[in-house]
Amino acid sequence: MMKKRFGKEKISIKSIGSTRFYFGLFVGILTAFTLSYLFNYSREILRTLTSSSADLMILDQNELHFYNYFYASISAVLGLSITLWIWLHQVPSKKRMSTIYSQVARTNSYLFFWLILMLIARFGTLLVFILFSRSSYDNQLKLYEDFGIIFLLLPLVVFLYNWISIRRVYHVGTWMAISFFVCILGTITLYNFTSLDQEIINKAYFKHFEEEHQFVDMKLEYARANYGLEFNSETIEALKKYRTESSYNQVAILKSAFSSNKPVSLDTIILQIIVVRNVKDQGWCLYDKNSINFWPYAFPSDIKKQIYLNLSDSAKTYELYQLLLEEINLVNTPKIEWQDYLNSSRIERRRISFAEWMTPKVLIYQLIDVRDSLLKIDKFESYSKMLPEICLSE
Image 1 (spheres, one colour):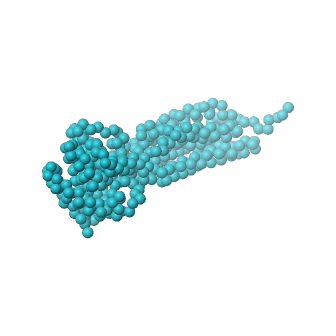
Image 2 (cartoon, one colour):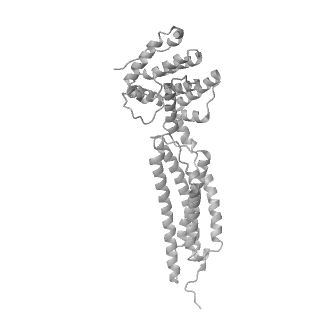
Image 3 (tube, rainbow, N blue to C red):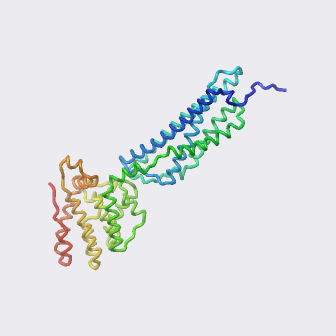
């Protein structure tokens, strides 16, 4: 009959030590709250950084709640890791194997704590700087939808790994089950007390585009009231974005619609007016800035063609003249002094920069020719009068 070489004692406050037990609980709770705040504030800081080169990354409500619960749960189990690490920091036992297993369990808890922190930090920062901050990113990657199971399993793996190591030292009994429910309670508590409202940064970000968004809403309401036009939510959302794939595609589709030999729809004309007025970006362009193809909007010659194609439609004709007026106003945007530039709004700066650096000269010449030819049409003399002269800068 084999003799037991190593007998495990039951884990208890007495075996841990009263002082060490309560100190471990305190440090574990403090660690959990600190990590949860750290994760949440880091997410908001990294979200803010995405707006420097792309549109601000905005999480939908389901995604936001998912990440808040993940931060709370992983913080709770990492707090447990620190608590267990402190509990096992005791005077070496007379039993040699107990001392060895205790040191192994402490090492594993400490190692896993920093390993998980490194994993979250590295994974989060890489995604932000390589993908989320990239121009044209449009929330194509849904981590919580495509890889949600990983986020759910990670806290569970950390929890089980800690207790597997401790079971080599103690008979854990009901302590493992109790700590599991404590972690669940801690997750709910951390979620309620440490979750941050992303609307604080969202409102500050959209404040910079308030003028553009007001014009979008005004023009869409004008189209609904006067022409009965309705636009779907995807179209409106793309109108209010600037450096995303959907926004770039919208600019390109509107431009190509005018280049066809078929009459464009009234809603397309309205959308193109909004895009020109707000100076929407076309994204990466293969053409040289001196090429007319560098112009991201409907060519003046295409607008003129559409006017001739829609001579019988007074509503379309009027809006086409409005579109031409917007392009002339954009080209005519005057230069201002540096001090005035600093005090100007974001859209004013964008219009000034676009008129000076991104408007091909050949486009301006075409705009002049189109305006001169339209002035000769007696039928639309009243419309033509609202087209100002075009300033050709040296």
